[in-house]
Every structure is written in C-alpha cells, then in structure tokens.
Image 1 (spheres, rainbow, N blue to C red):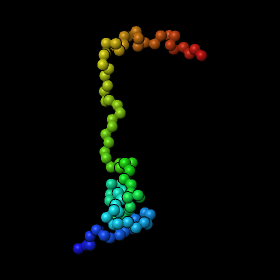
Image 2: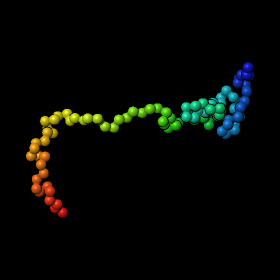
Image 3: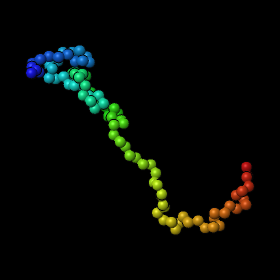
Image 4: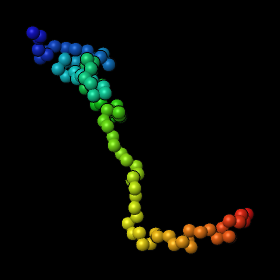
Length: 92
C-alpha cells in the first residue's frame, strides 16, 4: 500500500521547483511513459516527429502498366516512327 498523493509534495525533475505531487505529470518520450515527473510549466507533449518509423507507410509512386485514357490520339503511324535523313544530321 502506498500513501495517497492528496497532500504530498514533490520536486519537478526538470526545473527543481516544489509542487503538489498530484500536479506533476509523467513525461512521454517516443510513445513510452517515463518515470520523469515534471511540473505543468515544464511538461511538453510527445512530439509527432518522434513517431517516425513506428507506422508502416505504403506510398506507391508509379503505376505498374499505365495506359493512356484515349489511345486514338496517341497511335504511331509507320511513317512517324522512321527517322528522316534530316534528323540524323548534326546541325550546330
């Protein structure tokens, strides 16, 4: 059995100021509650950036076999696929 925190005092682990023990909060670091108790002035919420790597992210960047919406405008004719003699010459 432990005594209640009703009238007990405690020191902030960060700044050292004496507070009522029931007003001191536990710090959470990387989503884990620590045994560090701080006053309401020193307490800070766990930063979302500390949660990187804890959740799996599926973010595909490209389609596997993409097809244009309208194939009629994008079909190549045999004449369009052959290079012309002017295309082969280098003109600086």
